[in-house]
Image (tube, rainbow, N blue to C red; front, side, top):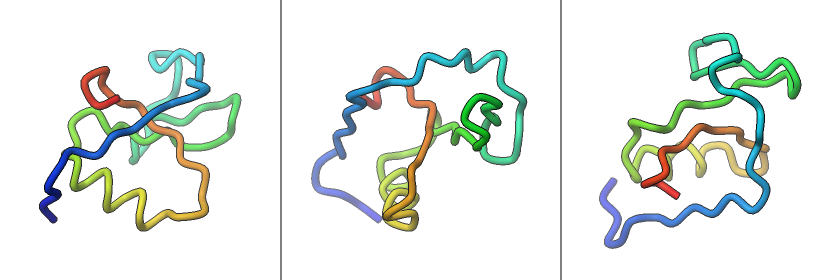
Length: 70
């Protein structure tokens, strides 16, 4: 899916848990504090991230993003 403009994400309250201390899982890493998967979006395109967010509307999504994606 092609977007005319890159999507813009803002993280008003970023998580301060240590990514390196999380256990790897199929989506990225598992956060023991939150008891949920943190999706590794760092290599995803804007279109892939948009599709994921659209497919999970109404859910709380935790994700790792590169600084250039924010």
